Amino acid sequence: MRPDYTDIRALTDQEPLWFTIGGVPRYAPFHPSMLGVYDRSAVLVNVACQSCDAEMLIGDGAAALTLHRLAKGEVEEITIERFASRWTCGDPPRHNCPGSGETMSAVELEIIEAWERVDFDWKRRVDLEGAFRDE
Ligand SMILES: [Zn+2]
Image (cartoon, rainbow, N blue to C red):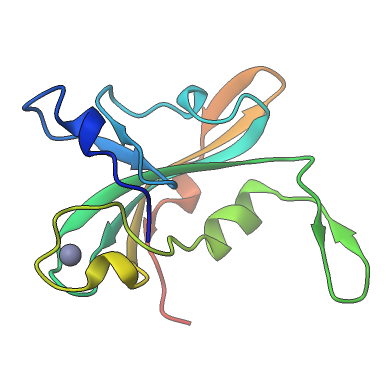
């Protein structure tokens, strides 16, 4: 279950435009530069609550030097292709769910935006955007 950010939500009557993966409400239009300073991959994903079907946009990023240790002790670089294809939301942001959806993993629906940082410039990767495939 994500932290409760009603203190931030109480500062405005506006609905958040998107949330961080940690459930923090954001009110400016998404851009990957609003995520981690070392991120090299970023996505904005539409997800749905399993309980009430509320849809929310989640922005998340990963640093290229985040090396993922595999069971065999190997390491692999996080590319935008790998990050986008394996992205999962986990619990959705708090949304006054009438059911128990805040404790249930959200359903990933569609990658709205995918970005890759090359040197210091963020480049859109529209080839990675679109609906998640059931696999
Ligand atoms: Zn819900």
